[in-house]
Image 1 (spheres, rainbow, N blue to C red):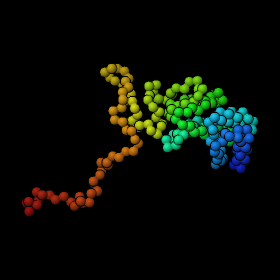
Image 2 (image 1 turned 30 degrees about the vertical axis):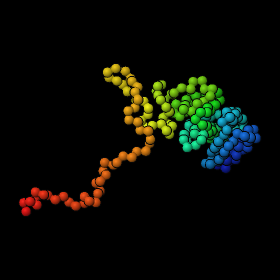
Image 3 (image 1 turned 90 degrees about the vertical axis):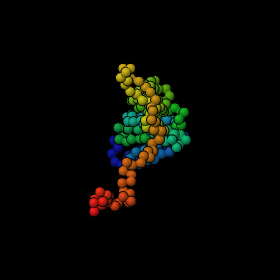
Length: 213
């Protein structure tokens, strides 16, 4: 097992060389910081690289840790899908990233790491990212009739549909939200506005007392 930073960096740099030798066009960007290697990959090579990192005895990334989505609306490739893998044998971690547009899919990796199943479903539910060849890609955190994907940056804070229990109909009903908040910038006037007005610094005069004098 690799224990110190220098040895970890050495192993991770060797992994880069191994990937470059076997998949010369796979890596778009790479960085090594805090003992963790980050590789941005071509989507078409993602599954090949993940399978290679798990199966190759020089890598041994047998442990799948996490998969998540990130939304960057200002980018042409709006969504970033991030994978974290761990090699218990070498005591090293690796982060893999792919960038996709709104209408593209990412290949599912559950045939390599079955534990990725619900992570992919979560990314689909919250971001609308689709994973090709996933056997059961459906929502898992939001309601079945939920509209939209709540972690997208353009999703309104109030949502699109209100779900409530109707006492008269004795059932759960869905109806459009009446007061949509389309943007996440609030411009409300403070209820304390005007309290520090300089024109009100003078003490009030008792008019009744003035008349008596």
